[in-house]
Image 1 (cartoon, rainbow, N blue to C red):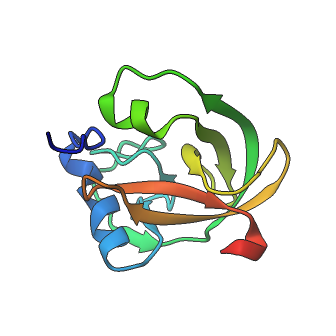
Image 2: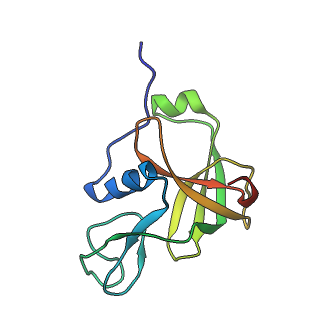
Length: 133
């Protein structure tokens, strides 16, 4: 029996997350018209509806807004990984995202984000304590 993998279906726009993770960079879409940083990846800007959203390096710092520990999942991959910690983080560059927690971060803590490849080879956001990054 093969080891289950995390869900890997993503939008075409999200492919940039995987490319950035493969290149060991932290890049998100930035609207060329209004400079709004986009997350999650999308086809048009959430601020001005412009459709030129190049991937650019952005600051990795964020603040944990809320965290949770998942103790149940319907996904076979996550069932084997439980408990699994996640958090809602507010990036200093603008967007709010959900990230996997690698350290004991709590609400209000500062964090450094990274884009990493998960077991399915897909780029995901991971939050670390600043001194562990």
